[in-house]
Length: 278
Ligand code: FES
Image (cartoon, rainbow, N blue to C red; front, top):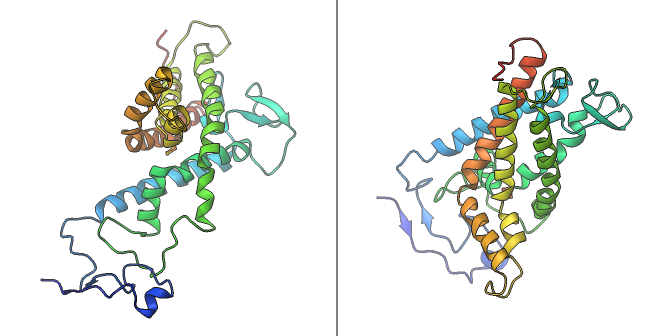
């Protein structure tokens, strides 16, 4: 049995100096790394590998700067394409060419900011990459703990602003999915596998935003009571139901963004042919 001794009293000198962490005075002394006997390391390892693989692919997509458009399909990584050097017919041309900055690099900061500051992803990457802590009841390797109350992690509080900004991106990607009902010459009334891919991608991104904790607060927060706000209560109830699935939606939408980019890339490069349904 593990050596579990009595905790040191909070009034010890080290405790008064503000020492923190699981090895700090005042915490129970345990002779093992953890008393857990289940394979607790599997989840942070799987999350870390998934984040690493998808993250590396998306980095490649951001910097490769080609094969992101095959009319009418555009990769979500390059939409909206705001620079003058976008592939013909794919861009808005708001800015001049900013070589070597790619069009994706200009816009990626917003969806990436939303994901990086997401309450769910914070849990995932704090555990997988910073081991802080790697799992419940498993101590982190460092002795100090400041949480998110000080710089740099206090910056995570900007999450709600990324939430609002990325709603605009979702609207643009929905528009991209709608115009994907055109054929390669611009005629309406057609649908290919790419159309379906863009629709699913836009739907998952809407679900991701609508299940966000900030969305739940935006529609139902700062009220003294719901009884006089039935519409907001209904919206809050729906957001709450979605919020319970936020982790699953977060993974599905992240992986599908990468798959959508890959699909458009394969079609645009001529590696595969887009099957037409009608
Ligand atoms: S909490 Fe995950 S997107 Fe807001």
